[in-house]
Image 1 (cartoon, rainbow, N blue to C red):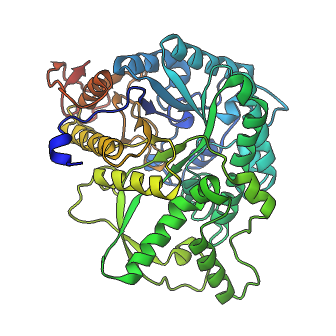
Image 2: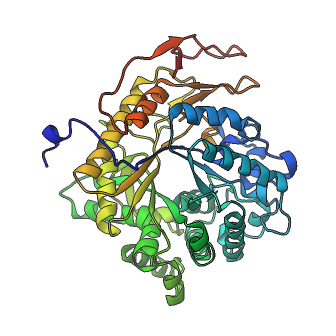
Image 3: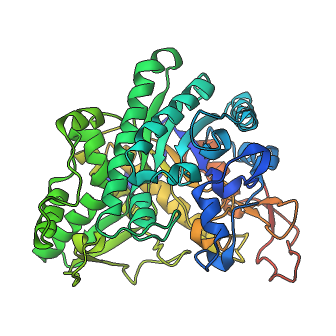
Length: 505
């Protein structure tokens, strides 16, 4: 099919899911309100030490625990068909177990789910988005086998409590990020540094926890509730730095194996880790004088448990990389040594915030084709994709909208030309929020949040208007440019005024 003549209009399937995404710790605030227990991110941010931008916390965040109705107004303004959010595990189960159930937490999420459904918006619910209860972490967190069964019981509780209304479930968000940066490098909460072991142990237990949660739903709830369950995997697209270099090509394959295939291959193919990953870690383990590989071995029973435990493929995509083979000189084992490669941002790629995020919309199309080819053409939801601005942001965010427009064109090409079965797209994020170690400085929202005002007002960016037009038309055809400008917005505390004006949908 000729792209130029036949892709003048970028359309999407009639049943396409148009959404935006958030996560509990990043928006809710109310960190100790109404019986909520502490999470690892409460602990992490309260310890200070400049691990988060300006030592900011999510104690208040967007205030969504008390301002849910304001969030709902934003969702309705956009005309979304779906809204992805996560449950705060410790708001529902303060110590992570069903030994004590917090009714106030149930009431909050019932309000969220019911009001979405009343407005014909489908909830997409993530069980765990980085904010493990501190009490579970105290038992070992994702490095402990105990957490596998604790998580399954938490999942069962959620299915029992909300599953009559929730039809799309995501068990774990971005296990790669948690494994590597929370339990290997200690950059994210709970900040555990176990080089060479922590990532693989955490990943091993997250895979098994996800699989048990999927089977629990499939066996006990699917027939009555008629929902679907998956896991949200993140990945960059990767290409060799030198396309003529066999070493760079091999390193690129290794990068995708460690990043995406680590979790996707067991779930979608055969229950086991990628061969190249197993060989590399085993080889390095022998060099280190170990009798067994640092990567835990999956038993035949575990492979059977994990294989096929996803009803759809959830992809979080943000950027791409050029990959160059290199040998990391170190006597100590580590994930970085096992990778043995260098990640390079092409200087020709535009960059947004944070600094690692190069803008590469075409990389998403290539990654979607890779998933189709490698994982048996699954039904795919793009569950996160976004463009960040540093604070203070531009309300007339024309560059960001250009990114979204180009990205949606690539998704449409993947669907209409490549035959990829993409069924949904979720912007990260509905509104500016507490962006983990970047605090309030990295602004990914379709709606601006003024964190300096007690009322935390939400104001639409230009990109919100543009996105709402796409949702309305189910494509980019005939996109309108007319919008009303009112205001300028300025904030308190002598903060630099926002550049741009208040855009009204």
